[in-house]
Structures are given as structure tokens and as C-alpha cells.
Length: 393
Image (tube, rainbow, N blue to C red):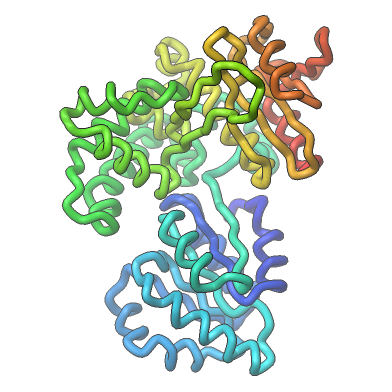
């Protein structure tokens, strides 16, 4: 197993809370991480709720779960049985009164909206939440000495079986199969009667306009569906942690702010697979290259600062910043992302930094070493920026 950055945090939270929800898209490594915790504990029970045999064991869920006293119970794809959450609350309280304060349940899920709603309603005060993303750059570089730069991870994306494939062609085939499986099996299991062909077209269109402002009416016209249908489909892709809506910054600065969110396919490898891009050369020669790199870097940064409030800034008069991070400590980091090794910023970035009251200004690009620019801008590569954010948050 490749070590994951959140593994220590998972162990810590299981020592503090009765239940921990581990969220992440399919194939990101949730089950592998849970199996490692199962091996560490030595006394745990695992149920995959996609299997009929596991579901039959929960015909009487209260009796089954109470019979597992002093054992960690791992429930995989728990969103398949939302009725369990009401039972879990009572079982947690009974086991707590019996002396088990923490580490009772590890709940794995790939549909964040369902799980977050159920846990907030049924398990308030009893549960902690973690998100496991596909491999991040700092994980890959820390565990594989042969990897010295970010382009291979950017091209393939971070899903473990895509990243670990023997070659680029095998990696692309895995991602294409992953996309088909989601469309033909996984999404219909959660949302029946959803047309896979239309959803694939939408997903591909989002890859083509990676990092662009969401224009629902334009997408609806191209797909011959309503704007509400497009919104619903994007909600589903966001819920499955495959797409990210990055909201516009909404402070009161007396300017005409852009209000529409930006939309990103979260994993760069999936972006490239949807567009049929196999190798670095094909990615670099495609118009999506700059936006794909921007999305890749944003995912690295947000994984390092999970508690920051993330947005972008744009006005009708040209002030713009790719990412605005409002920290819990009250600081505001304004970030511009470039693919160039000799990056510069426009006047619009300076205006944006002034408008939002930036306390830190970063220009992130594939540079070798960090250096300062005028007006308090720090230029650094993505890994250095991630390390700065991780230390701060």
C-alpha cells in the first residue's frame, strides 16, 4: 500500500469520535485505507454494502451492530443503505454507555451529498469527516524516488490504478473504463433512469471548457435539455466528487462581480481521458493544457488546506485571480496559476488582490526555485505552495 497523507489523521479521529466518515470518489483508495486500519486494529468487521450477502447480514441492523461490541465496524458504500443512519445513532449511544467512547464505526462513501446530509441530521456530534482524494503530488513524490517532476501525475491523474499503470496507453484505457463504469453502473445505481449518453456528453463538454464560467443555458442548448436538467446533472457529478464548482468571491467591494461559478473536472487524468489525450505531448498541444494545469494545481492546494474557504475573483472590468483562499485565521491568500516557467501577472491580479484585501499573494508556476517579485508577490512551484499551505492550515 502506498502511504496516504490522511492515514495518521484517520487513526487520530477514530481515537476521538465514535464514527468517522471517509469520503472519496470510487477507486481513490478508501477501501485500501480501511483495510490497513482493519489490520492495525486486529479486531474489526468489514461489510461491502454493494454485496447482497452484506445487506442480508443487516436485515436486523441494530442486533447485528450491537453484537460487534468493542470491534470497529467498517461499512463500505454506506450511502447504499441510508436507512442505517438512524440505527447507527442509537447503536453508538448504547455502545458509548457500555464504555466505547470512540472508534466504533468507519463509514466509507462515494456520494458526498447523501452522506453529509445523513450524518448532519442523524449523527451530529458523533461523527468526524475526512475526504480521501486520488493521489496528491506530495504523496507520489514522497513514496517514489523515480518521480522527480509533476508532468506524469498531471497527465495521468491521481487515481491509483491510473497512476500505477505500466504505460500511458494502459493508464488511458483504465481511465476510459472507469468513466464507462461510472456512467453505466455506478451512477444509475444511485440515480435510476439517468441517461448515460447525455451525462457522458455533459462530462466531456465540461472537460473541454475546464475552468470556465458555468453557462447552463449554453450547455442545455447543446444537449437539448433544460437548464434545470443541466444543473441537476452537474449536482450529481459534484456529489460524486468528480466535478468541482468553484464559487465566485462574494464580498462587498462596490464592484460588478462575476457571480457564475467556475467548473472543473477534478482529476486531470479524467479530463484528459474524456478528451482522448494519452501523452504529455498531446496534452501540451491541446487548447485545454493551461486550464487543465490550473485545475490540477487547485486540487493540490485545496487538499492541503481543506478548511479554507475557496473561491475565485473576477469583475466586469478585468480584475481577476484564479483562487482566493480565506483562512480560518482570517488571512486571505490570492493565487494566480500559470503553466509558463517565466510567469508574469497582469494588472487585473493586482486589482483583485487590492479588492479582496490580500494578506498573501502567490504566483504558482513550474519554476525550479521560489523567488520574490515586486508588490509582495511570491513565485513558487506547486509543491512549495502546498507545503506552505499545509504548514499554515
